[in-house]
Length: 339
Image (cartoon, rainbow, N blue to C red):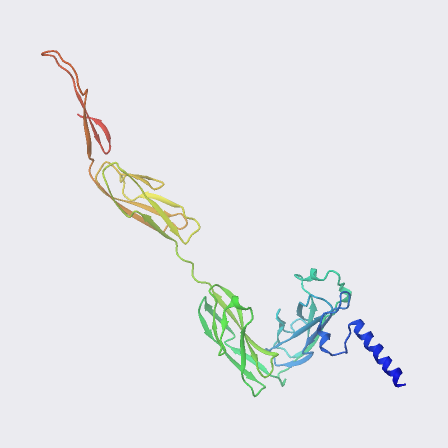
């Protein structure tokens, strides 16, 4: 009899090993089952009580598939809200409501193409919302805040229903939403975002409080225009090329003008001085924001004589004869016959 029992136990052990099974409730139950098995979703806590307006965190364990994502929902209209992280916020009205976690999501449904919908299982939890519920509750104050990018705000957490009043602070969305210190000081990221600061009760880690933070983006940098060179001295009719740079705009084009009438001409930054001496100004205006300009000052001197040429340069004339000569004068504004 003893021998039979020993053999039976040995056979049983071999069968268990061959099937890869384990006893119910053992740690191996949490591992995904082989392909084709039923998908099972288990939520926790299975049943809980909360005070209206407070929050509780649910978790879901998925077996039977490699895709362990879940989609959270509240069965009843007006039965509160639950976010993608499983944080449920109770409504103002008392009642009994149901939270559901369904395996997969639109973004991950293709991850398990061999799993039929009929083999899926949704996990459910019951929530009793009551003003007299004896449970730990966490409230974050202020409940909403607006913080400039890179700025900070201080939050406080109130814990009821427990002698341990401590909380752990986190930012739900991760590093892209800044950080929060152990004492509730939140530091915003460098760009605009909508973030959630959470306080989790140390006494009961399913109980959380949250605050929504609107991070305002930094003001857009103003368009700025610069011109080079900024001052020039020219002789009459001489030319100068100016360049303009536009900062803080993808449109770097400028419009060129001259402030004074008769102050010369400018085309695409190429300036030609007038014949009259004086002080003139070339302006480059941003096409993205015409109110943003840069200006260069040009001091134009009088027309300068460069050379005088006598024509003809040589010749032969009879005694008492005559020969006509002309003089061509070249200045900074061109060559002219002397009058």
